[in-house]
Amino acid sequence: MKDKMTNADPHELAKFGAMADLWWQPGGEFQALHDINPVRLRYVRERIGPAGLAGRTVLDVGCGGGLLAEGMARAGAQVTGIDMVAAALSVARRHAADSGLRIDYRKDSAERFAESHPAAYDVVTCMELVEHVPVPAVLVRACAGLLRPGGDLFFATVNRTPLSYLLVILAAEYLLGIVRKGTHQHAKFVRPAELGRWGQRAGLTISDVTGLRYLPLIGYAQLCRSLSMNYMMHFKKR
Image (cartoon, rainbow, N blue to C red; front, side):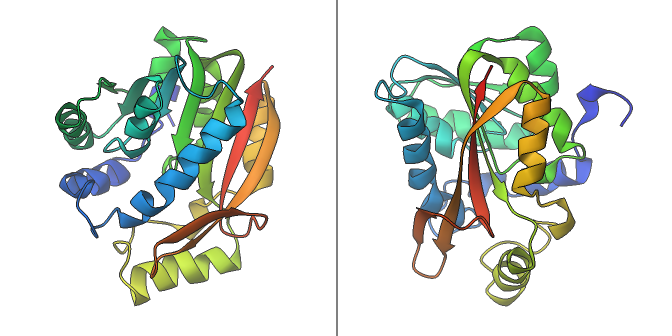
């Protein structure tokens, strides 16, 4: 990587740009994210504490079409969403306007945004992005830089295990066709120990790690103890 501003894979950007119009399509390419979004939102709200998201300044890194950003805005947060895919941001802006929500969407990388907005947010969320960038440790450091001291940072990703290869790659992409082929690369999945280590090096403290169980055929999603598949990690900034 030539510099920290280029922490994006052009192939990944093109891939998600081609799917941008499908973000809010019922039963479409992003149905899995629609199914798990309420669980993620509840996790964020409960981990923050009794005050919840109301009145908090929140940044959603890699916001895509705005699923989580809209949920946090409805919970009373002042939400900014950033993404490198212009087409996804256009969809997000249009859907927010149609929904009567005020969300500030901007095309930018976390690394570049952190330089102009240091320690600017109470809460930062980064869902399903660390497994899609060339150097995930740089992304984690940028997210930490965007957070004020004492703030909350949330990641969601997929563990690199044999089970995740069987279910996320073989089953979801090739057997069931729930996710488009090539959406994920097993080698880029992130183990909890790796994510935790990157966070700690960036001045963060691990507050919680929780698994997420998802059964796509019935749309079932719930938090669980097992970290062998999807999981969420909550950091606090020291």
